Image (cartoon, rainbow, N blue to C red; front, side, top):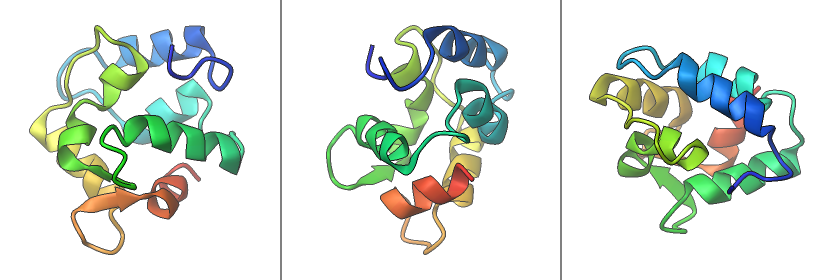
Length: 108
């Protein structure tokens, strides 16, 4: 698993199952449930690098859509509304993508 040693498999499974129905993803609840809100900056950076699938240094909208699948391969894609809500929360400079610092900020 991509987050082995960083996050609990049980916490990830519970968090992904809690938002399996479209429209139920709440990033604040999800981050808290998997333990990211209490994680170290180093661990947050590692999680960011997994989510940044194209290694561009940013998480773009297309990568956000597949957000849950990074945590659990069988998980659903985020809906357009969920993706836009997560992007709006993270993209503080309005460039249409989430950088490392922006990602760490939404975990606080």
